[in-house]
Image (cartoon, rainbow, N blue to C red; front, top):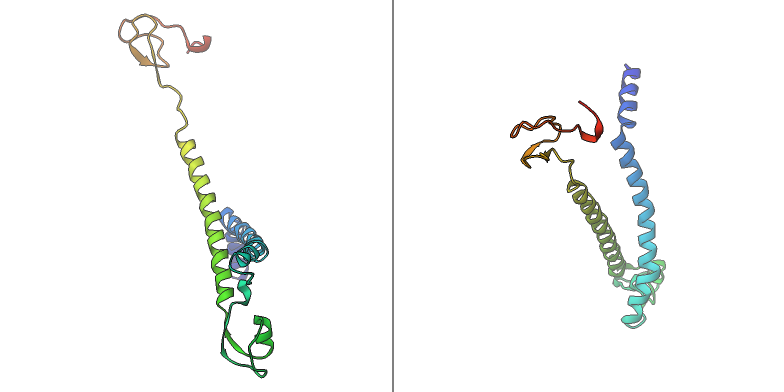
Length: 160
């Protein structure tokens, strides 16, 4: 019974969509690190300069002071003192990260949809042609015109 279970699990695990999903999760994890770095190291300093040199990570409200009374210059100082804080700056960082990820996913899906539309619009091979004698439309594989009964030359020199 255990071998049947393991066999079923192996069949499930090696299916293409499960492997694709695993690859997507791994790439998503790596992408998350890139987005976090982008927010922390690029966007936050620029936004901080625009709003007066303040770092979002240090936006917090002290709900209850810790062992050492405040004010606390940074969030880490408040946490070291044991203060209970409402860390809305870290929440803003998370929102910025989400917006960036959502925008990148939007661009990715938009590109994929555009490629699918272009693929769907690809021209199909013609299914009919004009008779060289009477110019009526006839099937492309026809060897005799159904309108004027003319014998037609084979397509590409190949007799059917």
